[in-house]
Image (cartoon, rainbow, N blue to C red):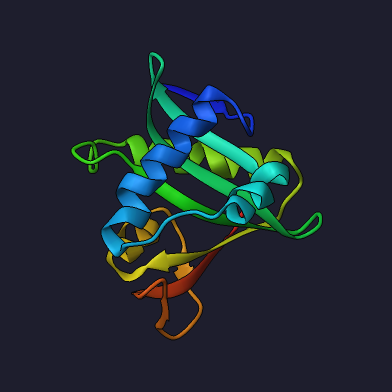
Length: 144
C-alpha cells in the first residue's frame, strides 16, 4: 500500500475521478461537471495505491487559511472497505493537514459513514441534513 499525493490532470487523477464516479456519484445518478473538476486544481489530492492501481482517495480543501481544511470525496474501492485502507488514508490525510499547518479537519459525512469517522476521533457537530440526496452530518476533529 502506497499513500501519495495525486497531481491534478494526471493519469492518477483520472483514476481518482473514475473511483469517485463508481463509489460516490453513479449510484446516485450524478456526474462531475468540468467546473467541479477545475475547482480541484488548488486542493490537496490524496490516494492509496496498490502498485499503479488506485484503491482509495480523498480531497482536502482549504476552508480557513492556516486553520481549517475540509475532507471531501472520500472513496474506497468496493470490496476493500473494512480492510484498513480507509483508516490508513485518513491517518495520512490528517498528517498532511497537520504538516500544512491546519488545526481542524471538517467534513460532511454520509450518515452511513459516521461510525467509521467516530472511531477515528471525529465528532458530529450538526443536525442531520441532506446533500446529494443522502443524509449527512458535519463532523470535525482538532488536529493539534
